[in-house]
Amino acid sequence: MIAASPALDDSGGLRRRIAGAPLILVVLVVLFGAIGWFDPHFLTAPAILAFIKRSTPILIISVGELFALLTGGLDLTVGAVVNFVILGSALLLNGHGAYTYAVIILMILFGALVGVVNGAFVTWLRVPSIIVTIGMALAINGLALLWSGGSAPGYLPDNYREFGRSNLSGPGLLDGLPISVLVLLAAVAVAGWLLHGTGFGRLLLGLGDNARAVRLAGAPVAAVRLLAFAISGAAAALGGVLLGGFSGPSTDAGAGLELQAISACVIGGVQLLGGRGNIGMAIAGSLTLQAIFMLLNLIGLPKPLRDAIQGLILIGAAAVAALRRK
Image (tube, rainbow, N blue to C red; front, side):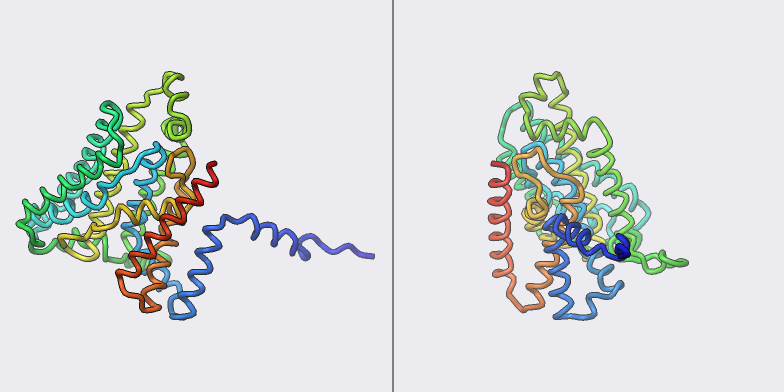
């Protein structure tokens, strides 16, 4: 009898690989299939690329939020930072593109500074991060509305908006590739290197898992926490640049993004109390959450009901994460 070739008879191995796949990826595939059932065009490459393009701001913001979550804290300022970045950019540029890149760098530095201030209050004054970041969010939103006069000013120049809405034109795979996706890939590469390829990343995971042990080991706990919140703030500012480029100035463009970012991370399997999480979890959770929103929109549910469902998803994911940690 001739034995079957492993390469030809690999059904058992395939089943094991499917069973061992992270649950979030299975859910994401099911959601894509459901969206494709309502809209078959969605399963084409251009449509999926357009979906990722629209999701890029929240993907970057969620990756930044991951760093704050891994410390055992929360960053609820990201939505306010997005609002400030969009309104501030429009006011500073006033439709002229001569200083676009300088303003973008200035806004990213502003986001990082907000993160450092948040981290300083949490680290040295021992104020809970939820209190610090809620207060900071209120202050930033107030400053943005005061600066803009309560309305969205003018428009952003074309060389600013191209980061969020333009595509490349070139040979092969580059043709039609959104610029925002390239920004996303660069941001994910840097974040992945920081978290998974440096001592800072190992200390960050240890800080969320057992802060006292890390402190007793002589690690620079304060510097780690400050950098984590700074990364979260800078990512929020970068997400604001892309969102402003995609949709234009608005006084409430960042409303609810902090909850979306936290929900995305938790759905992806990141633990709210820190110590467990990676870049892939944040990305997968973000795509899943955006796919849920798109499916609910195709079904025809009104926005208030979609918001309620998002809240239930966050509660359910947090409960599952707590049970898993216990």
